[in-house]
Image (cartoon, rainbow, N blue to C red; front, side, top):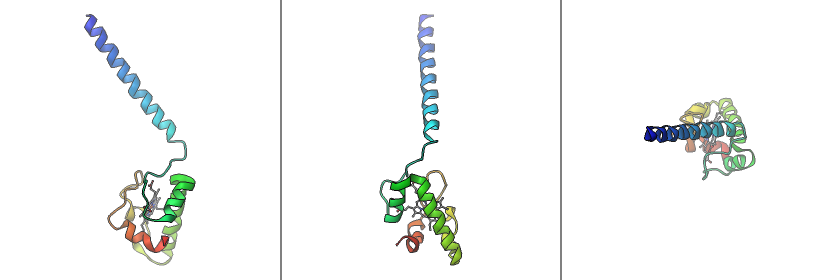
Amino acid sequence: MRRLLIQSSVLAFAVALIVSVFALSSAEAKDPKPCISKSFKYKKVEAACKEGGQKAAKKLMKAIVKQAKAKGDKNASECLGCHEDLKKYKNTANAVKWLKPYVE
Ligand code: HEC
């Protein structure tokens, strides 16, 4: 009986811990997020990330997509052509190559 009591309080502690970790990470999501990448291929992207985190990087990327559309560059006309998803922004195989004309 006593053993059961200890087990259930350990369980309750674990649940409380998990809940508080979740609460913490969702609170963080409201702040301007820094970029995920720590080593950049292009100075322009690095500078945007340093100045304004992912928000600034997105602004830069949106401007690039606009330029690409204007000159009919299909490769660089969509976020998802260069990023596998829009959460972690993992680059697709050609992302760095395709971005080059817009950042150098
Ligand atoms: C032509 C390819 C290309 C397109 C189109 C593109 N990106 Fe990117 N993006 C890149 C590359 C390459 C990097 C990494 C640059 C570096 O390493 O210097 C990057 C980096 C980023 C980052 C920083 C990621 C981090 O480390 O946190 C964000 C955010 C981002 N892109 C958002 C977007 C959004 C939003 C769009 C659409 C509006 C978009 N990108 C369109 C190629 C592209």
